[in-house]
Length: 146
Image 1 (cartoon, rainbow, N blue to C red):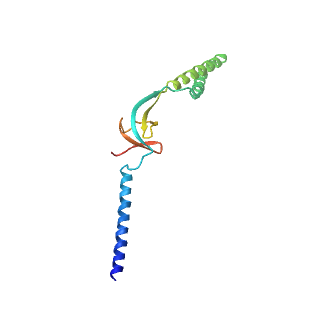
Image 2: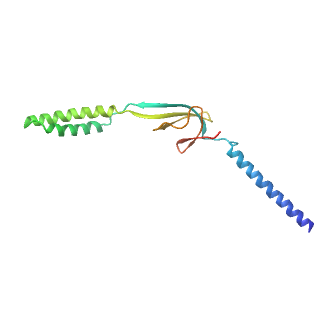
Image 3: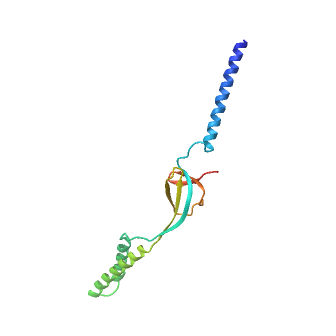
């Protein structure tokens, strides 16, 4: 009976040792004991203003609107001339409005732990600052607790 008790005690001690070893490994991984392949440090955050381009949508919309308004004036050949002039003026104005629409976004540059640099864009100012440690998750950045 004593040998059976010793065997059970030995098995219990081995199971306890394995359990503690698993817990210790999990804690090391959570504390950064393993290498983080998607981690880095924020190097810069800047607001970027990009001047709008011309896709033609503004010109078409402006031309249609200008033609409709121009058609309301004159009669006979004067009406046709006013429609053409309204369409031309509207197309020019619509194109200029479209080109002058600026796009603003925040650009974040991150120096990754593997030495590469990645850039991320945000429509609103991000919550982290230069020097913060971050991790890339699904195309976005998250602060890493230090």
